[in-house]
Length: 337
Image: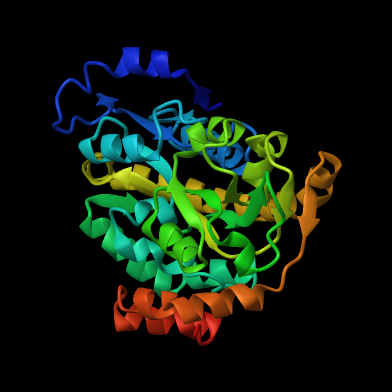
């Protein structure tokens, strides 16, 4: 069974390995330890299936490879974990593509506003040519990405002040977005006043009205209890986000090939299961969140997409990707502007 450790326990055990910025493999003799950090709750499907992957890895490697899972931002926020991943202080993390894009800009390709009409379309795109190009760029940044991306889902807007029915309702609206260039760009294009805050600090920021709203998939709205400090929810499906399971490149290279295959197989098997679990969670959560008091609206998404076209959002972001990558995206989605 995967081990869930506190941050204090981790830091105590890892102090020697983290003493310098140089990479040191987390292993003793033939025993390899993989410390995986993520910013999601313990009961989120991503955490649940990461723990399931850990059990598979331990069984298949006969205990030679041990995966430790640290949910709830126990190892720091996304920015902190990414820094530690690159230095080798931790070996793996689950990172949203919108956050990873601060290091690997092409990782934002699947965050293009209103690009995907369904989760299946997103998965097929990322399992195909687009995902292959992104993984190649991740490798250039010194990281190894598991072949299959995990699902965070479509993002929706919540507010404590008023319902968001049209782009005009966003004008001047103080909304939290993750520290992601494309998220900032999208909401600036819609006329909002976006503020970047890590998810570990978001509940308090909404409670104290540092921001009046946020945007996240239903799963995060539920597991992070955002419904306690928000009143309205607008089902915009404005962005699809996935989680890449990424490893420190030096650590990955130190892992024998047979163990690499065991880890890849376990994560990719659980990726398929996690996708279905997350979609199932999302499909039932609207009713749950209504019972918790959120007031829902189903706005006309074409109004928001038209506003992004007018603001030059698609023209700006098309120029940031290679022609081959944008072409591969539109082969899946159809023309985006």
